[in-house]
Image 1 (spheres, helix red, strand yellow):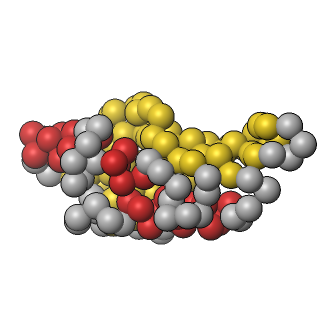
Image 2 (cartoon, rainbow, N blue to C red):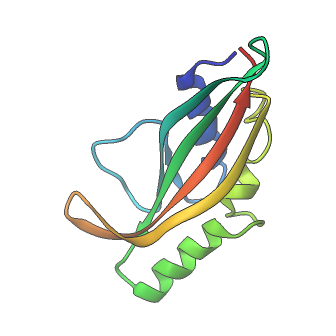
Length: 134
């Protein structure tokens, strides 16, 4: 099984394939928007019998500039689309380039304004579910 760090890096690596998006597998001291920061995990061990697999939940926080309200929200919306070159779901769904058995973007929450180091951003929290064999 991949380590937690390898899974988190696998998610960030897939996010980095989105043009112009700065992807982080750890919480950075500062961010340059647009950015995606991978947090987690929450873990359910033994999701299948006899140590068949474990389930992980990671949160990806998307941050975009709020300098122009319309442009910022429209950019965030492109990342949240179910498909397309800027879609987080399209980039992450799969096996994270062979790191895990299965990964999928399950849901979006907290579409909001969020301050990061005193700078307001538009933000959304994206839940990524991962299944991996031990």
